[in-house]
Length: 190
Image (cartoon, rainbow, N blue to C red; front, side):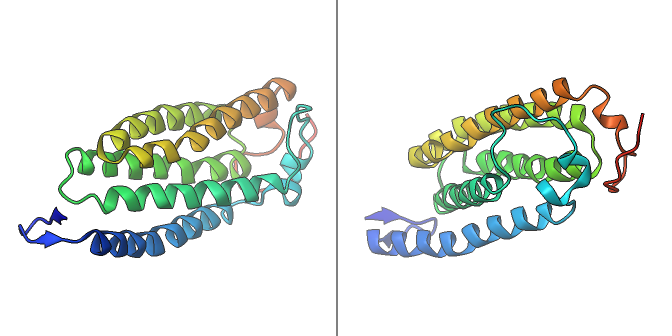
């Protein structure tokens, strides 16, 4: 038995039901936010600018990215639900603030990279995302340890994304001048 904020006793069953309600809200919410951000600029083969870039040999096929991000957003949704369900936990509020800050950074990356072609800024952003997510993981570990463990694949993906972003920059000198700094995908000759 646990005690809620009003001081009444809450059963384990009630806590599980509450967590499931949060999961039913946060997982679809995260997936919708991720899908929505991806709609702000064409991705993969649908982006003529990106399709024309030289990519490193380890660049995954285009289908890997939506699958990976769908799984990561679902995991982020479950981790968020665990923190939201931890009412009264010390550091819950700071953990949530950092989570939503990280989410703003996360949702900004695709439009910045694919839409505005700001590869250098996107690289800085993914580094910042990693740092904020690491802080979030530390805070989550103080609220619900399993929520922090769920963030490990996300941290690993961010490292991979940063390396991929860096390699694309290195393999494509002047990449940001290949197209105007807008959402157009027309490649201009330099």
